[in-house]
Length: 493
View (tube, rainbow, N blue to C red):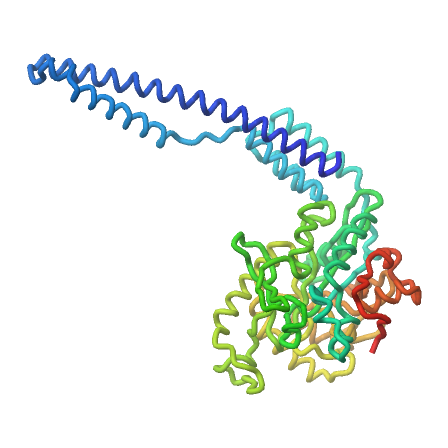
């Protein structure tokens, strides 16, 4: 059964259950009212008898207006109180339906063990319906096969463009944006095409992780990604999730926010100066897609978000260069009087990203070239990144995505003879990603995972769209993805 049919069936079932629940609730309410009236009448009769017996009540008052009025008010009050204080009862059928919906979603994301646990640890574990579901999940799990971790492709983007007229102008900045940025319609089309071709999002930590060995040493160990036959694992990342100052007014989002429902969204200012909150970059767009297509995500995995630091992060000017109390204050930067509050906001946003399935990464503090710069420069830059960016994250950051794709070594595995590698390892990094236009490049050693990333930007899409190259046909059809609002041809500067 496809997802839409499943949702329709689930909705019909819920409505039927709710209808039965409303009818039962109505009957229970009528019973409570009836019992309350009877009880009040009995109490009144007993009180009446006592008062008559002691001579404290004139019988004429019992049949007068006052007596009837008092009884009516008392009865109404008792009925009202009975209705308002009656505890709400949760219908077991509704609870079970929602529980199965939760476990179904876990199974759609290939976490069959979690789906089984959700049901088997519930109070409905022994019901025939739950037992049938558990068997269904076990059968789906048994049909999965291990995906070859050496064949995981990695695609990456920069901040998505909302307004091409303001972004892709005929000047140096506009031409740069046209080369390296992807538009929102292009990104949405890429998601759909990769989904249609059987791609499933995984995280770097799904591929391998550092594990402590019996002798106390730590070693990178491959993990097994189990997927249905024909599904293909891939990694996604986004660079420069900082919403830089130079991008203001250029047709990109302003900053990341949490909306009134606690959902990650973007603030955007249009050409007329109108400010809105919505889906203006990868995070909310990808969230929406996974919500509609749970089987696009392996156990809830989303993309990797990579940050520099020199302009702050997520659209907030949190760097020490904006801080009037910092010895590293840069007078060329406009001071941020709300820097303490903004840092707390960023902490909440980072936590929300992690909770939502995103991985966080370094893109260096100053967006520097790791190939060309000296070790001392890299050490200073890494220290500043740790001070200004990692300090706001929920935990240690172990992923670095090299700016410009500039690696610290060639294709040979890193060794301890590489001082730059030693420095980055000491800083806590275990995953290292460069840029490589080949479909797949992954390297596993005992100390690290390295992976090449494929740029799905204006230049690369144009090259395939124009027929000058063919680098993307395994994951998308550039003819139907390329945003024709772009100025062409697109050349690489």
